[in-house]
Image: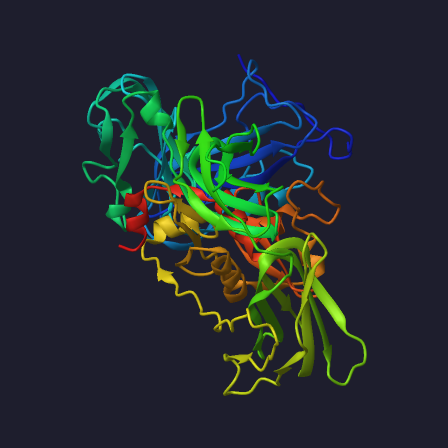
Length: 617
């Protein structure tokens, strides 16, 4: 039986035949030499008739330089498989490239003009692609997650191991990824089931920066700290640039019972005086707990206990009021969760005799001529507001900058300052309306020269009649810790990491270069802001959503993602500091050094001792 295409008059413009080569699609999108690849030519029936046969489709011409074809699939229209007007069909070529570099691919359909087409110019399509010279890649063990996160011995556990393709080439097959290629060293773990993502293929490859997930379900039968290992590509099927990244070892605590699992430590206890009759407390717990403060004085041995809140958390703060001025009290910090209650030792706190605000460290001004900034710092005995008054000496009126949040460590950054000599003084006002006012002092901002472009100058000519004040030494730069493990750095840059298996030490991993900085106290957090803060205009800052604030019309998610982990200084205002949290790409305001310190610890990511050590190996 034969089928013929309708005969078309050259004068008929309402019915016509037309084929359009619309695209040449390559899988993977960036192929490599010697790697399985697929070239698919996309053609459209742009005419008004169904295509019933291969007439015109089987006369084609192509040019795929350095592509060794091993298989083809061609369109095969028929009376039962027509290609309707507007429908697409494909020519598919499987094979491998034998040489790298730029390749111009071209395809022409109906080469012999068998069909009477409306437009033959669109029968030819060309596209230039780049072929990598090598299929070498890198796979890293991106994360190992446990559900529950703190497993008990003999408890059902789900372990998820996530890999990341961090190399230059896509993965197009299962080489190195099969169950036979994977070594899972989990001592005492009874594996009951195993699943994984679909293995990559040429048309569904594991892209660069893509992830592959293994999921294991089972039980740990040994309690205690377990050394776990996971590695890929047992038989070296892959060409890896850095094979060490495809294996990892870590430690996981398997708990004997719920009491051991839920145990926690109380650390970083700090106190600040609010007034002569009230004290603020700050502390951390290694696990979520409900906090409480107990206290008594020398006249009463039984404790008064005050609950912080009914919300379990790791970062705690509360204040105790109604105390007697000038008295010594003995405090202890307590915490409880569903199974465990802990308490610190008692520690003495001597209340001030009155509500006078004193400078425990006198105001200092530090200038940076290159950045056109000045930073004024001081400390007070009572929690108090921060206000800096400043002006160019030639001016009459003072301007002011500061914060309403109460703190004992005060710091104000002035940005985008003109050169000249400035006069300044500070006022710190307590919650009971007493205040410390400093004498007028000065600093000078100079035009940058070769000798002072990177020098920070400090003015310390302040005088005072306050006999209780002590001169603070100039703040020291926090030394960076070099990170040598590039794979871990790429995963952690811009984040705050916390050593959860140690004493909860916190570190900020720079978003700009492979370094991290220890955050031991609020002053350290502020010093990091000053060292690493980058100026940003109000216009650009508005493109980043503020945490817990509805997004404005100017928010640009793409821009925000590009700023992940950075610390910004709002140079067109008063140098306000903002941190862009990498997990949400939202900005958090750091009003005071205390705010910065506790915010950074709140947003911290737990890291094991072994992974922390691997950062610098």
